[in-house]
Length: 458
Image (cartoon, rainbow, N blue to C red; front, side, top):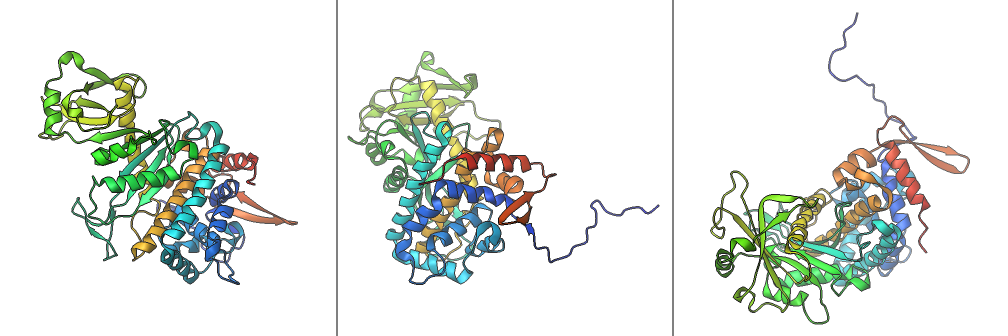
């Protein structure tokens, strides 16, 4: 009896297979592009940058790079993944052609950025209409989370600088539409900043909020139905005043720094004024209480602002700060939402932590580093990253159900996109057959069926 040596079977490898398609699950993204009308919108937006007698459409080139990033690429050269599978992704431009387009768009500055962003706005409205009850505005409101991201630079790139975490790189400010507990989220703003950009810079928060609002349907660009959430970096007089400005009337929930005045006010809150905090399921949150502050601490802030403080027993091993009191960790936020219990408002603000999940997904989707040298080029790269993240949010929203809709990019790639297939040509039809034994083939085929049932754009 011959005993097998090793834990894995030995497989003989031979090249030359012609009908095998790698990244076959990427057809989910291709179909999402088609149903959303993203290909035609981007192509129309970039028409001014198409040269006479050009073979490749600039919109298709940009979208190919975004698809490569969505599939796990992190530089322009990774578009080679798509070029290797023309049966699924069509003709793909060469690396020099891709680089020349990025340089051309970067040289156009704000004009190219505005064109790309306008196309994304148009497509986003269409996708939300297709999603219906699964859309982030299904409840009649939209929540936008603003948060900063530190992107490490390993070389001397333009505007790279030391960061507040003693690293070196850039400090973009991003905005994400929250899809709630049943979904993920999609990017609506990305403001590229040097690594030493301040966290509490009000002008940057205003610019990021303007970019985010421009991506929303027109009815959500002003009014109480749109909620802007930030951490304490957004708790500045200028930014809060901008949000509450007459005629804009946006709802806000922004973190606040515990100043000495707020700390002294907290010490005066009687025990009877503290209310037990709650969890998302309605249960009492153990060891946490909330109270609303009034009086002099609101002087100088916009009319109608409410200041809510939360105290909680720190986790084991956590270090208390000077602004904490009586062995309790203190946090504070401001909002202009009235008529709702402070426990509900505090829970709503605490759910801003989902923005950290969106940042983790962005890091895994092209934001691990900025691959280009010039700032103008990296601004185009940030738009590409946002398109990739849009697709990774829209595809689950339109085609997946249950827990699969919550899968983050890494899991989508491992389970769905990397599935291999066999391309079969019968008559004039090309059929992509997926492996029957792959555990998630059912998810892919069911998702493709749902996309096929959606109406075609236009």
